[in-house]
Image 1 (cartoon, rainbow, N blue to C red):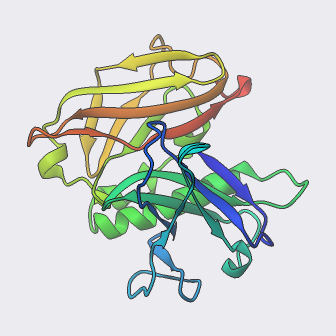
Image 2 (image 1 turned 90 degrees about the horizontal axis):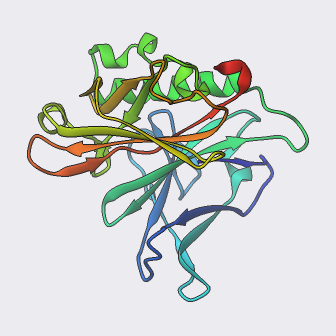
Length: 249
């Protein structure tokens, strides 16, 4: 999910909502820009040496809002500019649960989506270079804006995590039961593909084709891959969100 905050916000809510409604948990949240994470102790982004890399979230209400946890971020201390993009990483008991995208916006001003896509790609490349140095996976040419815009023929890359890091090839390569589930939220339509899915370097990848139904209608789309690792452990990728407009088909 993508959320927008103003650079002057002093208590912007970072909200984790568990559809299971689980209460009494202790989730934490981290903020990443490229391969640097925010140190909440001094509001400085660093690649290592943090005092407080994760901040504790507070349960909103176990009766009125079960499964909802929140942290109030002082965006003004980030010294962020309009158009800056950050990844919000929620973690529960040591496992990366889900990520949101935080975009710094200006009140009443439409954002330059191309600039945002380029910023996302730059951060993705920086992170891959840390996890997969010296490999093709760290090459910018493999991270394309089409992943985020919903063109037909996109190679949709879905990151797969084991704990807080991308799943190693020893587990991911050789996975069985591979499927990618697509969902058009605007039309409430589900699509599932189970062929031509590749896995490796922490990602499951599927290239949309004519006739699979994917990205063929405008709307807000979600995509998530799943399978069983080479060691017999079920896994699911992070959810990737795209918006398809008439002119992008």
